[in-house]
Image (cartoon, rainbow, N blue to C red; front, side):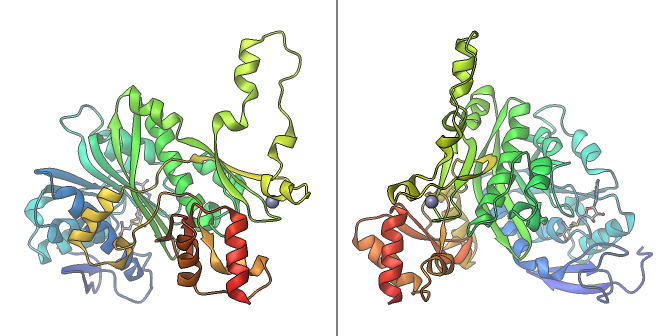
Length: 403
Ligand SMILES: C[S@@+](CC[C@H](N)C(=O)[O-])C[C@H]1O[C@@H](n2cnc3c(N)ncnc32)[C@H](O)[C@@H]1O
Ligand SMILES: [Zn+2]
């Protein structure tokens, strides 16, 4: 029986959610519920649904479930594949709402509730492949960094890990030092800072997996308002750990011309093997000149590149997985046919740099495609594009259309 006062019933998707009275939005007390999180939950239901389509008897763990909005929706809205949903939170009031929602939707049989610290809860399943979860979601206040390694330990080989972060100022470059402490890499305040933020989250996931001789395979990510969400498969084995190592690196950005590029570790720290090989060498051959912007250099301008990371420099989505999501969900997010080219360009930022008006995205994209450059939209920013074209070409097209 609920001991909390006047629960409200809120319909999200096809699920009835028992929530705290709607006097605070988002409600923090007596338990957390934010109706504005509906869109990110809709996206996760599609991702879990796509994942569960080809599997059977899956277990889903909502490690910081709050009032259970995500976990109860998983139990109620994913028709096949998911056998049991484990909902855990430290707040017993939150769990009362979650249990009430399970009853309202007649899914109590599928749901198990526990009141534990999230890492302790995840550790109960870290023993061996037999008891580990197939899917784990980590949805904390702010950064997921305290929980990611425990989550990786609690996932079966090939299982799905989804992680949320809401510390957007940290991830988007307002507080780069905090990002270094929480995610292990510096953030960068650029026109593509949301992609940098997501790459920092994947970097944290990969680093945690590598500690455990495992690796990650990113399959989807997006952001909405201050929510960042990253989805990956966890693969156990040192070969995955080794391949993740070469998918970690840096982002280099020129604040003079807008040049951007990802760099592998060995491109930045090329002095490291030399030092190891030649022990008597006095100075490593490393020059800060190497960080000069190659795009400015062509015009005779000397400008330094700013470095973000270490972060994930590999693919951040799987086309195959996105098309499976598009089959189970009509959300436009899954309809974007996005290139794997990293570090998108925001059109407003490009035109601002050219001191011109902002042209139509479709005009710029068509011009690039006509010139033979692979180009696409990105689901991370409706006003941005990904292109294989050099920055110079892109800038001259933008200026042309802005005349
Ligand atoms: C952002 S809310 C979860 C929201 C929920 N997943 C949803 O979609 O509505 C974060 C939750 O984490 C819980 N929490 C905070 N620290 C925790 C910890 N160390 N272990 C378990 N739960 C924790 C809080 O009580 C809160 O309910
Ligand atoms: Zn430059």
